[in-house]
Image (tube, rainbow over all chains, first blue to last red; front, side, top):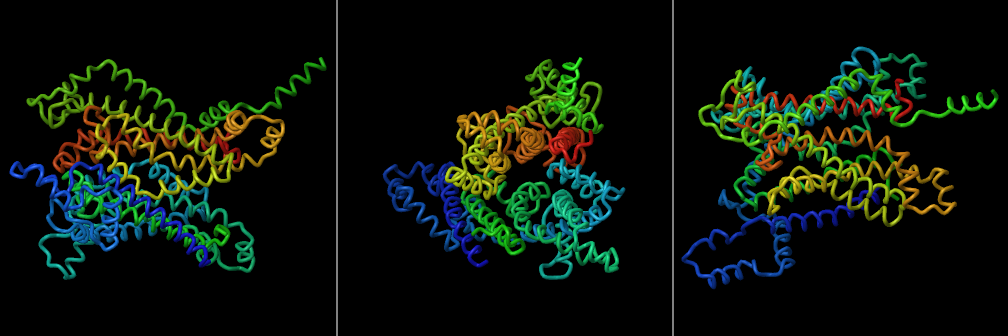
Amino acid sequence: MWKFILRRFLVMIPQLFLLSVIVFALAKQMPGDALTGVSMDPRISPERLYELREKAGLNDPWYEQYRRWISGIAQGDFGKSYTHKIPVSEVIAERIWNTVFLALITLILTYLLAIPMGIASGRFNDTWIDKVVTGYNYLGFATPIFIFALIMLFVFGFSLGWFPTGGSVDSKVDAGTFAYYLSKLHHVILPALSTALIATVGTVQYLRNEIIDNKYKDYARTARSKGIPETQIYTRHIFRNSLLPIAAFLGYEITGLVGGTVIIETIFSYPGVGQLFVSSIGLRDFSVVTAIVMMLGFATLLGTLLSDIILSVVDPRIRIE
Amino acid sequence: MKADAVKNVQLADRSPSGIKIIWQEIKKDRLALGSFYFLLIFLASVYIASFMIDQKAIARVDIFSIYLMPSDAHLLGTDYAGRDILGQLIFGTSNSFTISLCITILTALMGLCAGLIAGYFGGIVDNVIMRVIDFIMSLPSTMMIIVFVTVVPKFTVTNFIFIMSIFLWTGKARLIRSKTLAERELEYVQASQTLGTPHWKIILYHILPNISSVIIVNFTLNLAGNIGLETALTFLGFGLPESTPSLGTLISYARNPDVLENKWWIWLPAAAIILVLMLSINFIGHALKRSADARQRRG
């Protein structure tokens, strides 16, 4: 068991290294560097500019620059933001909790929707309730999230006015009060629900198939013949067995959410990391862009790692020997 | 007489061809059949219309007809520069569909090559290919595509197709590899190997036809997914260049809250077309999925 986790962890190190090299190469490709603003200044001679570049280490070979960059990141130093004029880590720190909060609520809603739907359509398969859920799955599978989110925003944000149409908190309430947290929740519900209603489809489908697979297995039949009420068989026996693989996909779910933040946060003008990413690209603030890609790339790797570990705990057959 | 009887028996024993099974399955599923005819007619009319309409006339800015409501002159109104929405819708649909199709074909080819080779040969080849796939799959692909799109020096439609394909072939390769792996162990492959058939012949003439149904299903579902992805990226402003309008371009106008709230005719039709396209392709895909799996067949 521990051997597997350790092994899986070791696999992540070269992946992380490759990720950092790619991000660094991309960053070098991006137009402009720390001295672009200075080089536009006509009062500075080319010789002086060369001197400045030398001093900043921009004339060093790439591997030297890479070493400096990566050791900076290891210490949490992502450089300075060109538009915000403060360290990148501070710019991101302001936004990251909004994104984490949104992701958390989305995850909770996704499972809150998936579990009852999956159980109902698995237990009563081929009845009208199963047909409704399956039909919903068809629709959800085919609907791109950005269109669904736009329609949700249009209907519930603008037309009905039930939810705010942007931001993460009402500017009028004081930080730390109960009203503040309520307002935060109010702002996060619509984007989270829009994502969850679509993202839940995969889990519902999986849970349904698992339950149908399990319901006629020997252990379920044994329980039935002992006279245990049907509902109890489902909640205590079948559901528990079916839930294991679902739990294992938690990590992949997180990975999917990371990609989704870019679109969802832009649509709902929600001040999180995804929206910061899009606006920074627009402003050509590449130190922020690089830092976000690196950070979310790391989060994605961690998500996959988490899933693999849970999967190996749950299902010993897949452990690598 | 006797010979005739034998002939008849042979004919009856012959299993129907792959395409026949697929068509029978689609015919059994009314939703899929309807989707199929709808797609055929819809796409044909969009492509024909896009040849007949002058693209320059659609792209011309007319400041006297900004944000017009739908009327007789402009069936679906106009946008912020006075351009006809219906015309943009026609070009957007044909562009979005063509480009998604290109991406799907390219990723299918890449996935086929990598998957067949990794699955058939196994060993070190398999290991190397799989590690590359694992790595690409572990990247945050949406963000990577956006960064690539901004970094590329000269951004064209071809570049966009290539960038998308780099990140989208991996899932397909994985699927094809697992199918090939299972197929390789079967006796007919071993028999063919014993007879001395070259590897490429076994792969192309024996294995490929046997996994073709899986590939077709995957191709259809990916096509729908790619339409969604392309329009989403264009919506964010990182998809097709401005010279090539997409359905996502029209929806991206809705990033302006005023347009989203009050000028539904600009973005709602494009959103509806994307939904309908993806739904009908998916319905066909699910029918194909059933025809690929004998246990699920209805016909």
